[in-house]
Image 1 (cartoon, rainbow, N blue to C red):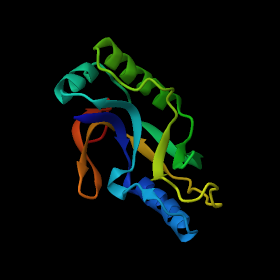
Image 2: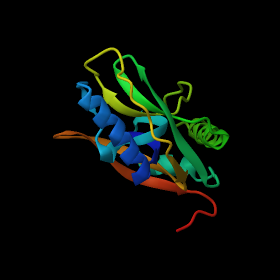
Image 3: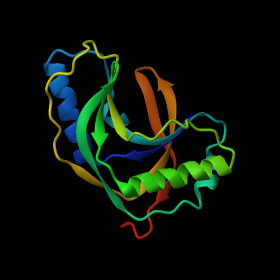
Image 4: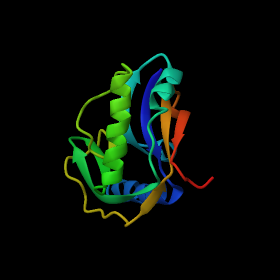
Length: 171
């Protein structure tokens, strides 16, 4: 199984991200756009790992209270274009706790420095980004998901394999 830990986004945040993608497309940028249902914020990428249940067991002690994330600009890593997330001490803290729990339980994960972004487009057909602005959209984070990634006929299909719920989150 290909696994990662992520924040699934609110529909308002997804709408804002789709608007950015549409502006890129209207400006003539082609490439592999992330589908609306796959837009997410990755907190830890695990990769190929056979046991989702043991990953969830390792996260059982990770607690957090609800917090907010906000879109903050767009950028790129070469031909991968993304929307940024504003600095959030609460987000940084929960990522540290998640990664510590994975490490302490021997679950491998990508240890690159956490740089919060949401992938919008891969293999962008142009090297310079057209002038596109982001909407000032925020979303409450009340759960964090363990996601499974499977290859489908039309790209990757992400399904939730487990979730952590914030302490005091509304149900």
